[in-house]
Length: 81
Image (cartoon, rainbow, N blue to C red; front, side):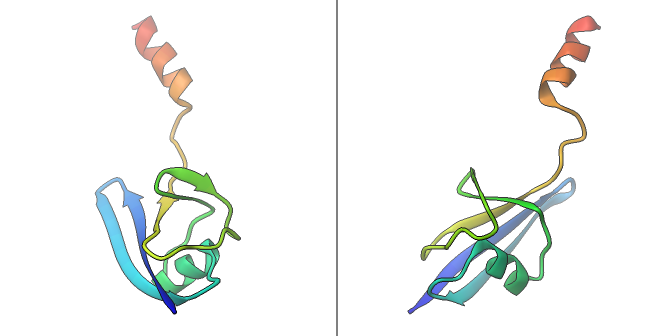
C-alpha cells in the first residue's frame, strides 16, 4: 500500500506544498528527498519529529525554518521600546 503525504516548506514569501506517494515504512527523510526539499527540522501536523520518524497515510510533513531571533528575546526588545 502506498502512503499519500503532503510536504510543506514555509518560506518568507509563501509556502511550497508538494503532494507525494511513498511506500509503507517511509520516513520523514524519505519524504523530503522525494519532494526535492531540504531541511534539518521537521514536524508532522505541528509536532516536531526526527528525520527517522515513520509516516502514516495522510500525514502533513512540515519543514521548519530557523528563527531569526529567539521569541522571548524579541518580546523583551519590544517591551523595552
